[in-house]
Length: 293
Ligand code: C5P
Image: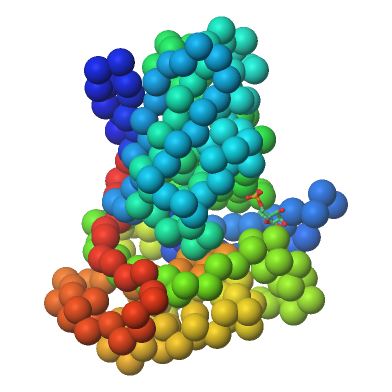
């Protein structure tokens, strides 16, 4: 996580993520699902700017798509850090939003993770990694990964994060249809259908460890994808459009509805052309790249 000091303020880059695979292991007693996934940071990021104020927490943003009250994960993160450290100051948080919201890209979670890191640095609170991890876990399932970033094998409900050797840098095409989805709803529906794509976790992890090429036929998949397609048929349409252009490594990220393609060098040009000629005007479409942190 890159941190910059600006006059009396601190800026943290809050990177989005994609899931290289997502396997659902089962429903837990607490209502969450045990998962196995590889998460990968991407260059696309929000900027989080932190400064001190007399008291309280104030969130501001350039986006009208996120809440600015205590329901914002960044607010919850700030509150948790203040309570834990008994910080005797208020905090201003400015969220410069670039990551689409409710997209499966962990936009809210990465902002929260950056607030934890940022407040810790800004006020020199000396929270250690384990303490920050504990706070992250209490805010949301994707927040622990976002604290670490890079390439990681993530399990449990998202709180067990094992950093892996970085994958070779790849460009990533992102397409998000306008419609938003509720993660809770997707998981609930998943329980009715119980999709099992036989994702070979160990094999996929060893491909990353041995720095081998990521080929879709090795079993990279997302077990929530078929569920989200039922609620957002655009996911299927977008995936088809990308596959038709021979972008084979195309998958939904998280609970969606963003679809991404991992691009090899010869596909980069095809992807630029796709962006220039994309027929669906209301979609968010961009090319970014994987990011090692
Ligand atoms: O942890 P977070 O608040 O981001 O999760 C949102 C919802 O997604 C949860 O309320 C739960 O329904 C579902 N979820 C799940 N299993 C996970 C992560 C999330 O069932 N591992």
